[in-house]
Image: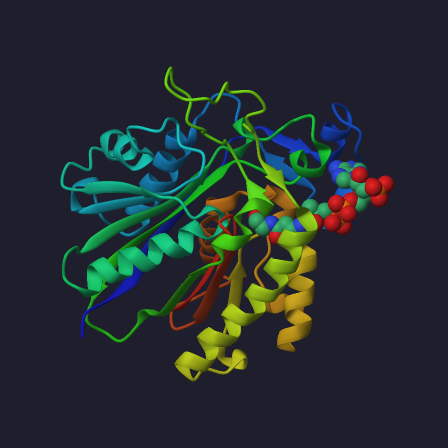
Length: 325
Ligand code: UT7
């Protein structure tokens, strides 16, 4: 039976680190509020690099770590909600920068669950025999879509990219189970860059268009705490695994309070969750991929370990994956 394994990972963040104290100089906020409500201390904010630049750097490292060359990649999937432009896709820009001439390429839009969605698609493409070596990237420059005069969202987000190369394999390892889900009826709780119909023929005058990220934090918090627990439980039930056999849960890094709650509900210590929100903030599509790569680099996960990746966010969407490293 053909399946897919994670052959290599990579990540990249802009080198401009912005602390909570830095933010308190440009808006009415403070380190105490941000740290205690979210767990965030720093985030990396791009000065000039756009999403495709971050995606390229992360992708390059993942290909090298997979001991491949760009020409080996036959599909590139980029998950992003902050593309350089609507067209061409970030994945096509990355294909060009890498010289991955044998790859087809497309983007996925599922916000903070996007990396899970993209890995699920890549795994399905490999299982059905269509592709062999898929580069999956989660990349965001959220700083260009943040309303810097809205302190309730501006302090939360950061820029970055993470990547993984999925490779066809004949052993019963790698991606063991994936679930994705959406609750579109709650989409209004987390929105960005409205694009209404405006033309010489439409009645819309283009006033009051929402360009930035807006979030009903309490509603999204309610959703996130519910689905993170449900998703992890479903993965365990469907695969007959015990949580004790899971080395790490690598969640979307949105708020440490969500993790605290989930750990309590799942009856595990918080240390079961791999967290780096302190250093990067919420990087949406990129967060799970950056954390996965960091966990590899710090030898927190090793061959044979079972890891659950779990994402939740805009759409509203969620998803989870069980992977044997
Ligand atoms: O990535 C997708 C998934 N995302 C999530 O799951 C995020 C879920 N939501 C959250 O994590 C939390 O709702 C937030 C961290 C966004 C907000 O935490 P909260 O405990 O819900 O705070 P709040 O919005 O109720 O605000 C409490 C107070 C307000 O003041 P008043 O009205 O009580 O006087 C805010 O004006 O904190 C104030 N406030 C701030 N104060 C200092 C809001 N933002 C700030 C700020 N600095 N940056």
